[in-house]
Length: 134
Image (cartoon, rainbow, N blue to C red; front, side):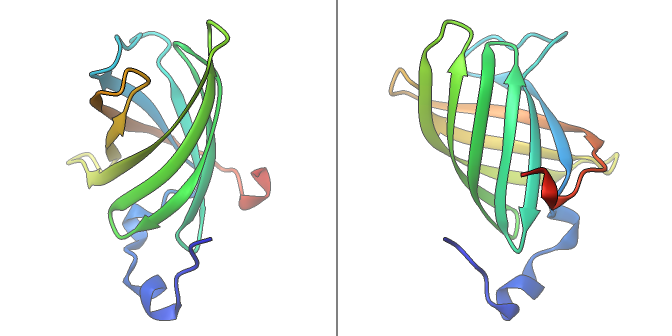
């Protein structure tokens, strides 16, 4: 498991810490995004290690884990879609800070179709949950 040493930990900008942050998917090249009920992602982070869950739109239940270095996130994920299929994969996201102070994740991943795709998720709220919410 990725565990940054003290020097790496001090180099990780606090503004990109994802602990307790919530994001909604706003676009994806792999599918249409439901603007009323998009997939919602909740992130937890400790020392650059990430984990979380997601659901909504075409996803019934999803989980992910991975690591963050500076403004880059690498995760592995698995979810069950509304059709009962299990989807597994990995993704790399870039974190950007929007003019309004909210974070945006631009994610590159390979879809179940084997093609390269891009999705964008935008921060919607800062949850008051703790790392105990594993």
